[in-house]
Length: 395
Image (cartoon, rainbow, N blue to C red; front, side, top):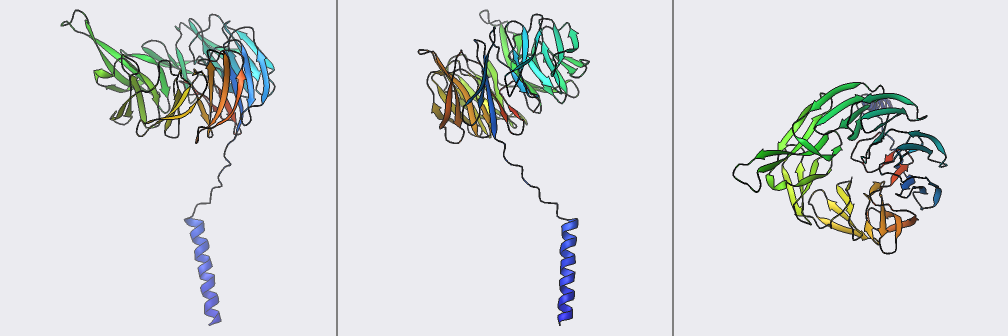
């Protein structure tokens, strides 16, 4: 009896080992959740700041001799700061030491005009594009005859929007891969996730009306970035004009529209462009662009109210109230919302860290200069940059 028991045990162990070897994949060890390490901020008076993202403790502060434009970038252990004197400066993220400075010829003033792709800093001027070595600032390439425009990046490629034309350029070499001219003029901004989207309009002459001789038809368009072709060309009802692309998520496109304040907000499925919901916008004029995180859009208004908008239902939830107006787009990183707010009466500007789950303020720190439209940038322990931008930038 003991012999048969021993044989059965051996067979059972062999079967178990075989099942594990053939059918069961190894158990993956979950990586530790990233923690926010540093939050960077700039202001329109030339201030550049670095704070401990957990406590708000000041790490370093710089003041430059010209105002800082919005759209600065943190990557490669450097913070790249575009300035109003047509120069770009690179600062060490740990010490604030300036590593290099490059003076440009008539730099462009688009908000997302500086992008770092695979070690190349790409930017545009009045009539050119330029690629700089992101470590040294030395010029790598230059392409002339470009009339400015917004810049976007994906998979080592730079995409340049200039009027009714989209151009794809290899970031490493500056070589043009394709140009796509399209009749529908897209109103910037675009949003890129897996695709580049835009809200566009087409005018049609209306001979029956002397007061309004043209009818305007709105469209949602998208581009196949591999082929350089128009992928989506979906007309939506005319009532959604005037409008703009408010945000996108992995599954939705959000359009704000209405000729009068406060207007309305609509949600459309990317597959088939089906209308999912349409709700009144409860925000005041001047609200900043939203930030998408975990099925919600986050945005604020001039009354200092930070809203959380449900992707599923369109419900507006008041998350918290801050002193003054919220002028910058919020940034959500690993469960914390970072946003700037200013009080126009007392001229006190603050950077806030707010718990995403509860709306509770974790800490706030003063910013010396005006921060309207300037959004923070967060660097976490995995080296990931969290930021608001209309473009897709390297992680």
